[in-house]
Structure formats: C-alpha cells, structure tokens
Amino acid sequence: MLNCKQTSQLVSQSLDRRLTLQERFAMRLHLWLCKYCKRFSQQLLALRSGMQRMTKLIEEDTQLHMPSESKARIAKSLESEMK
Image 1 (tube, rainbow, N blue to C red):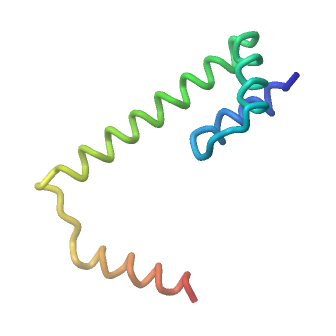
Image 2: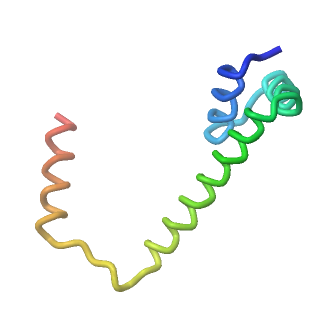
C-alpha cells in the first residue's frame, strides 16, 4: 500500500497525465482509507478549478491591458533565458 507522500505525488501527477490502472487503484485505496490525503486531493482539485476559472475570466476581460514596456521587458527576459 502507498504511503501519504507517494499518494500525494500520484494525486498531483494525475492532474498532468493519465495514471496506470495499478497507480489509480493504489491511489484510490489510500484515499479511501486516509482522510488527510483525501482532503489534500479535494483541495488540489479545487485549486485547479479555481485557477482555470480565473484564467478564463482574465482572458475574457477586454478591459485588461498590459503596458508595452512590460511586454518588451518580458520578451527580453524570455529571449535571454532561451540562449
């Protein structure tokens, strides 16, 4: 059986990739038995959902504008990191 650290890692990974059948089963078994990891999983899903809603609201807000100087500074920073 998985410990709490392994379970929390799988919960996090499950947001980015499809877990194997064995991983899903082991994670669900642990979540069924451990109220702390179950709470962590619920909180992580709530954070993800909230961030997705926030991103959508920001993208749809036509009144938000970034100053040209900020765009140039970000572009310059990205260029220097790519080298």
